[in-house]
Image (cartoon, rainbow, N blue to C red):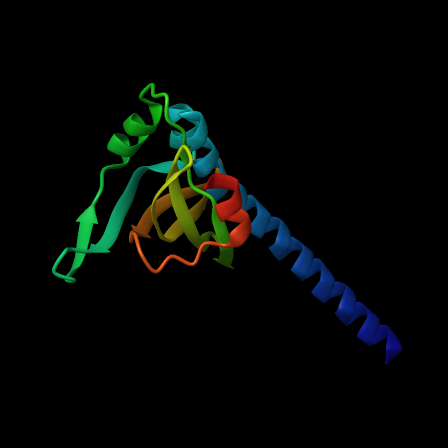
Length: 160
């Protein structure tokens, strides 16, 4: 009986370890997006996405009505790569990762700062596919708002 319990616990620990490795690999891709933004590195950014990745932004207009705006991945890549003096800082927290085979979803809270100036906050929702080149983002949606932002104190202290 002890042997069966020991083997069961070992198998469970291997599965948890494999899941943790996959979660780290998925989060590495997400974190590379923000590193590319900080560095204005369009090549690094492009490497995080599949060729036909979709991007969307959701927000409320001044009348409070929900809006959905489709983006263009290439426009985002070009904007990141354009030479600029300002640094795009987008710290994230509360990372939630879910994986089922070759599909992963990542949900993170964020705040966006231009240099040290707060512009907006929200949630980034990534969907990734496992490819022969590793995990790649095929869908990115974000929300944006300027109020009701619960930014952790350590983030505020770093950027504000």
